[in-house]
Length: 294
Length: 334
Figure 1 (cartoon, chains in turn brown, red):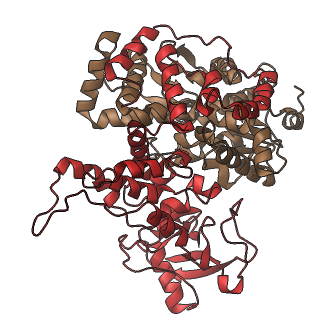
Figure 2 (spheres, rainbow over the protein chains, first blue to last red):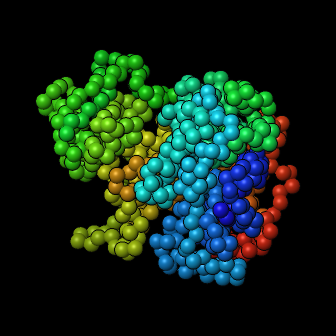
Figure 3 (tube, rainbow over the protein chains, first blue to last red):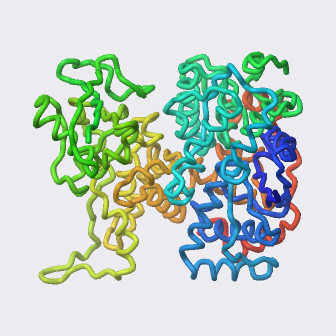
């Protein structure tokens, strides 16, 4: 299946392990990744906040680039998904805005016609590839691993932008994938809450306590690891975990996997191939449970 | 139809120093003094959660405390946790939320509780009052039969917030409030916007300065929880973002939130992508040495794990296209 692949800035920056693991598992999933190398950062909501029309123009450019490739746009970042879906929603509802935005794009060589579908890998796994096709790909079932899903805000909210009103089951896809891979999903409140990352640079204390609270809850409920479809959540939950532990004054130490890493592990790739040795929180304890050394 | 309603019971008068008051970390689940009690009620499949609670109070247990009045999402009294989400009991159908005929209701752990389903809304009202939710009219005040004249368009911006019924659902599930009880929260800040953008108000600048302080507009984590929880389409987050834009435009830029937004926008304009390496230092302020040093151990952790972004920040191909868009739409900010 051909997709216009948008990796997002973070998978090319501070979470290179996400980009590498996605590239690794794509052929197994039958995904042909046509990367949007000239698309800009979505603005992560920050640009939408300060200058909505600027953000809509930048995102319309990315959507138009996918349109020209003649394929659905696939994201591997909850935040990119949320911002692109949000822009799409506004542009579909406001023809005058769409006209102005296409005016801005006039000399870029692109025009957005409004036909692109934007889908996170998580949605594609269930809705396009299908769980029945995934099942036979599992070569190393993650039996015995208690896995806490962590969705990230922007793949769930606002529900109206993310298709949750038509497909409320999208809020349970991570659990379905975890089960299919042989793991046991951990039920906890934090799974659909905010990791705190959007505030990290200007409100570190609240941000870190937020991350710490959800990590501590998952740990208390017996999680061996967390899995997230959002690299920004990963930056706070893994990258900042030592600081989050200090902020809430509790020991933590629960590794956080990117969604493609979890899939890759079950598909039989080695932890090194999936860059599971490139995490701040050691993934070894969790991997030992499925008898693999980093 | 038979419904099974599990109710969180708690009585503050019996637990004067009880644990179920706001504190860090706020309890996600039952405080020890809270117990759950299951009631079975017979109601048709159109029944609301509130119908079930009233049936319990009228026919099974008169001691059940539940606050309600209008039963049509106008009075804003019956906000509570329904299956772990803040919602109005009067507009939530049992069949929409019940799993195998079962539903759990309780007061949300983020708020102090008076008894059972009755939260103590004092924090909510204090926050609302603290943003000065009234007009400070421009002078001269119209005399006699005269009134302030404003264009219709100016009022249209405010209509969304005016729909607020002060039910407090947004605050009950606010992610920042759950960590920092001093955060003004979504409802109060949406109300603040309503007055700050009213052309009749004479104190806009002062308002924007006040709201830019700690625990104000920059304490929101942008999680959209309030947008989804609001039963009236107020979209408090959208109003908070409008306040942020107004505050920046009015010159209240000496804060990490604004520096963060600026550094972000510059990076996208100049390279097409986010430069993670410079975002934090630029946000806390390049000369804020203590903050820079505090961030150092984390940076080293990430470096050790091979997670640092490339030192030389690469531009995306075709970056001129991006610069051009910035130029055409105009500036980094509005």
